[in-house]
Every structure is written in C-alpha cells, then in structure tokens.
Length: 164
Image 1 (cartoon, rainbow, N blue to C red):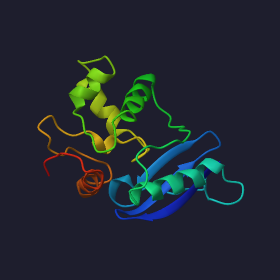
Image 2 (image 1 turned 45 degrees about the horizontal axis):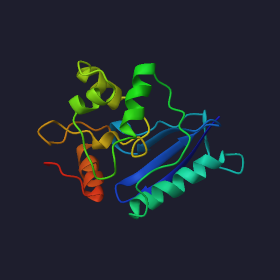
Image 3 (image 1 turned 30 degrees about the horizontal axis):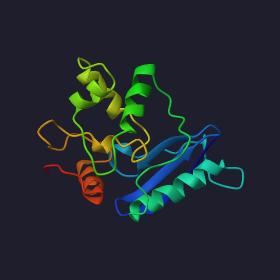
C-alpha cells in the first residue's frame, strides 16, 4: 500500500508518498512531475507508516530554514547504478552544488556523465535526495522535473551559488 500526504510549501503543493519500507516519492504537484494518484494510493491515516509523518515534518522544517539534512528511510526503486547516483546526491551538502561530471567522479565512474544525468532525472524523491543541487559545469541551471523556477527557488533558499 502507498500512503500519501500533500503539503503546502513556498514552491507550491508537494506530495510525499511512502510504503512500509520508506519514502518512495516526493514531488511538486504541478507540471510533468505531478503524481497521478491511482487506487494504489491512500491518503495518510492511522495505518500510514510513521516515516511518512516524519518526512512531512522534516520537509516543513527544511522550508522554514530549520533543517539541512534528512534522516528518513528511503525506498526508491531503481537499478544498482541509479541507487549509487542517488546515494551520492544525498552527500551534496545544503547550499552546495555540483556538476554532472563531478557527480560521475563522486561515484568513481567519470565517463558516465550522461548516465549520471539520466539517473538524476529519474530521481523520484525531490529535496530529500537533492537532485536540484546538480547544475551545469558553467554554474547554469539545467533541467528539473519540478520546473526550472522551482529549482531556482530551492537553490536560492539554500544560498547556493548558481547562474539563473
């Protein structure tokens, strides 16, 4: 069973989805990134896993400027390569950015820049797995499922150095 909760953020509505193992998705509910709720999704209730409420609280703290790190179980499905990239994303500090090449270097696979970009684009756990911190080597913003405006807002919120 997938449980979800929708929260309001300075960037718009955010949906947080969890199963019994961990957080499976965090997405902005507009544009291409919007989660299509199906019968598999149930609004959070007393049966929802505790980590769903914890994720909502931690995201609220993030948007209030009170949290820089997340401490949540994650249950995002992906290949071993994708999991490796997503784990590396969690090591990018609040307020820092890196390029796709730097991320490829971080996973000890410097020739896999395009594959790293693809894995980054397939990340379903926005903010908590901070794919928004990956920018071009020229410090310019690159694509983001939530939209470039939201990516810029998140990076400004964190005080990151980038070129809009």
